[in-house]
Length: 233
Image 1 (cartoon, rainbow, N blue to C red):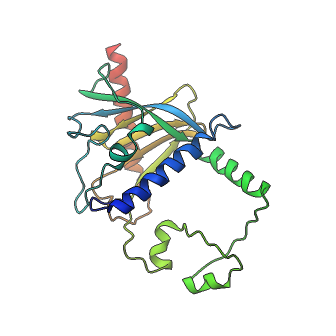
Image 2: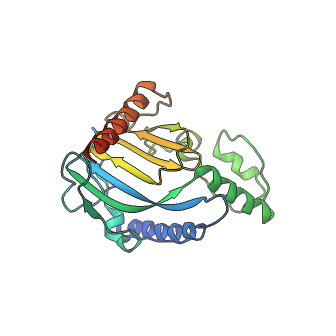
């Protein structure tokens, strides 16, 4: 549905989901533990942002399909305006506001609300979809992600690998940086500094092994950029 040939019906469905999620997550702002909060995100690039796009700068990876710019085409009113900035040691910088999830607090808030409303948790293992018929519930929400490929034989599922590392919390950092042309992203969450790197071999890659060299490379890229900023001040 998220591919370039998305139909008008699937685009409308995506927009409805996006707007519903936006307003639901906004209702969690200010809750204890700060499960959701807004942060400034600085998008940096060593090359021009894609023409007509305020979000994307990286070129498609080998065999990766083109994606529609659904956010810009259907929900621009839910996005903050981009601001061009230039106090950074890279040629192109834009700032935007991003809704950020503190995953631990967010999961805890959802679980507590679920239990408070009478929900129960039962752990079961499924090997095939026929076992769904054994459940007494009349409504089933299937959200197994990439596991659906094996469980339901859904060969349309394509893995996209992404490596995330967590550093110690830095509460004094209240912003995110997406250094797109260097394939690295970092955001300061309440439970730790998150650093994510993506690479040319991620699309279609189902390996779950963490590569320490990639993590070190990501941190080094951010450190060099921050050191260059310090030298400019």
